[in-house]
Length: 581
Image 1 (cartoon, rainbow, N blue to C red):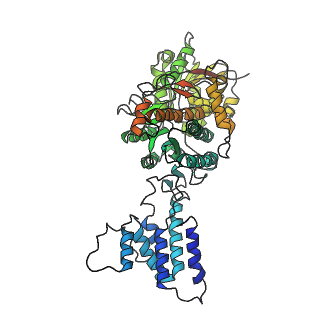
Image 2 (image 1 turned 180 degrees about the vertical axis):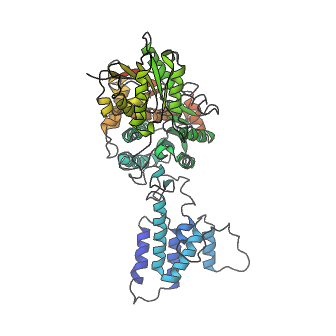
Image 3 (image 1 turned 90 degrees about the horizontal axis):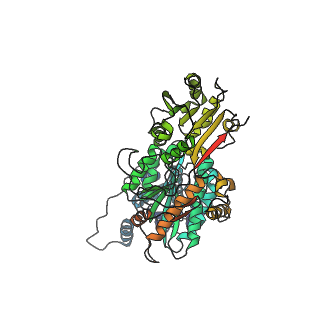
C-alpha cells in the first residue's frame, strides 16, 4: 500500500459502516479489505533492504490475543493443490500462502473473525491493535531490531530512521543527522554498513560512562562517516548504524545478534568500556568474521587473549593505548624520585569481571617503574559502589602506615575517583603531599566536580593519555591541521543539526571514536580493488592489519595498526592535576 494507504483503508471502512442506515456491504468489498489487511505491514520506510525486516515482523500473539478461537501458530509450508479446477478465490489464497509472508495465516484468521463479529471496522481495529502492540515492544517504532526492556529501557540497532528519540533526548541531534546522512549514502545502492556499538540506552544512567562522554563518542563516529562519504564519490558510501547494548552493556548479546543480520556489515567500532561484556561481544563478532576497531578500550590482554585466557581475538584492533603503555609513561615520570606507594583496588562481588580495573591492578604490581615504589603490605580492597563511605574506611589506615605513604595507585574506574578524592580531603594526615596515580579515563571526568575543583595543595592527580585538546591545537603538534579539520567538521551543520562544540574537546571520546571509524574507512577504501567493487567484511579485516605507520590521518595524529592490532605511533602525554592553596 502507499505511505498513506492504511489511512485510506481506515476511511474506506469507517465511512460506510459508521452509518447504521448504510446498506449491507457486498462480499467482494470485504474480500478487498481482507487482501489490503494482509498486504499491510507497519514497517518503517527502509533506507536499505536490510535482512532484519523480514518475515518475523509480526508475531502471531500480537494479533490473536483477543480473538477467541484464533490459532497463533504459523502454518507449515503449503502443499501444492491438485485435482479439479480451483475457484479464483482459492487461487488467490494459494498465492498468498506462497508469498513468504509468515504472518499471513494468523492475520487472515483474525480478519475473518473481525469481519464476522463486528464488520469491516472490526478488521481495522484488529490491525491497529496489532500495530500498537508491536510498537510497544519495540521502543515505539516499527523496527524489530529495537527492544523495549522490562524496565522501559530501549536497546538495539537503528540507522536513524526510527526517530531521533529512541535512545533519549541527548542523542537526538546525532540520530536526526544520521537519518539524513544514511538516506544520501544509500541512494545510489553502492554502500557498506559500519556499526557503532556502545552502551547506548534511553536511560540516562549508562553504568560506567558519563552521558555527555557517550554522546560525544557517538558524534565523533558520525563526523568521521560524514567526512568519508563526502571525500571520494568513486568509493562505496558508508551507512552507519548505532547499536545500543544498554546500561552496563547488559544486552550486548541481543545487539550483536541484530548486527549480524545487517546487510553489507563490514565492521563494528566502539565496543564499549573494556568490561566482561565487551570481551563476550568481541568474541562473538570475531566468530562471525566481523572486524572491530575499538576506541576507548585500554585494558591489556585484548590483543594477546589473556583478557579471558581464550587466545587472541581475531579481527579486533584499537586506536587507543593499552594500560601498559600509559602506565609505563607514568613510571618514567616518577623515575629518579623516591616514593612510597599504596594501592587501592576495586573489588566487587556478584558482577562480571572488569578487565580494565584488573589490568590497572596488574600493571601497578608488575611494571618496573611503578612496583619499585609499592609497599607489599599496603593494599586496600574496596567496593566503590557504596559511595564515599567505602573510601572513608581506609583513610585512617593509609595515614597510619609506616613509612609514610606519599603515593596511591588507584585501580578502579575513574567515575569513582571523585568519591575517593572527597574522602582524601578528610584524611587526618592532610599536611602530607599525596599523589594519586590513575588511568586514562580521568581525562573524560568533568573537572568541575567538587572533588577535583577543591583539590588543595596537598593532592596531585597523575595520569597518562592522548595529548589534550590544547596540546593538539599547539604549534608543536606536527599534525595540527588534522585536528583542526576534525574540529571544523564536528562543529559544522549536520543536515540541519548542530552538535555541542564542547563535546569535541571533552576528554578524548570524540577524537578516538572519530579515528576508529576513520580507520575502518581507510581499510574499506583499500579493500575495494575496483571502482565498482563492494568490499566484504573479510577483505576489510585483512586490510586493517596492513595499515602501516601514518596510514590513518587521525584527528589525534597520524598512526597505523601493528600485527597485534594495537596502535602505532603513540604520542602519550602525562598529565598533572594539581590542587591550589
